[in-house]
Image 1 (cartoon, rainbow, N blue to C red):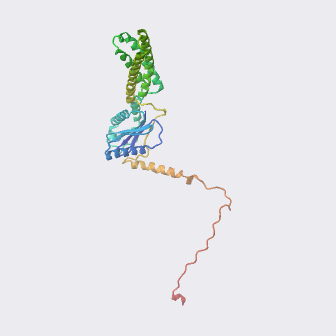
Image 2 (tube, one colour; image 1 turned 30 degrees about the horizontal axis):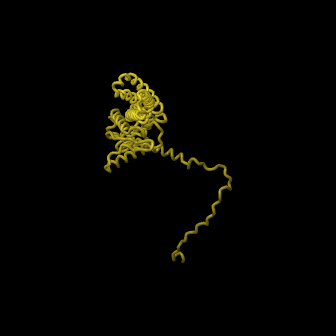
Length: 328
């Protein structure tokens, strides 16, 4: 899931941010970092860097006109999907605030309040919860569909053996879609396929004993059948789960109350006069709350408690030079 979104001007100033988790880092520091990476990649000729990866999260960003839209996303989320969502957010921002985006010099940042609702509408519909629950549910659906289709096509499989693949593929693919991830889809498909492989192997052994087929030939047939069915399960699991990987975001691990964070200490050109009084008030409050005023001098001290300073000798009288008229 995308955990935070920043909208940054071409001058590197963050004009809007929307966060779903608590971040201790300042918005302006993030905007400066991303603008520095973007400028470095452009000047060095390596192309525009669109992703900065970390161990658990990643920064994904892209330019749209005069704005740069960046997101802090889950490392498991598809980079292409996050870039597309950032493009949608930028397009919505341009449509809603077209008159302000044209010239951001004298814009009050409070006009962008309420855009977090647009971001929620874009992102929340793309989130899909995946895990043990989705894998188990996908396995149940896959088993039900596979067994149902197999029973329907059972009479025709005797005449056209390729129909057995049609009996497996739809159920495995849908189960992987429900599982929601390539690895989860593979697990779901393999769990679905194991009882089917066991049932068909039992039928092959029974038919081989009835017809007097050598046991080595029966084992080889079972092995080839198992390899074929497992391969089908792996392909269906990867394809089905991969589709959801590319189209859906992972949900937030820790659900916290979302909050709109209006960037602080942002002074756009032309706004210096309107913010000077606020800066002076903040500085005065910080000065008055300093440790110098917080500590009060001790009260009711005894008269002899303070050490006496050593007495200094009186300064010498200035030397006055007399002329010869005074001597006479």
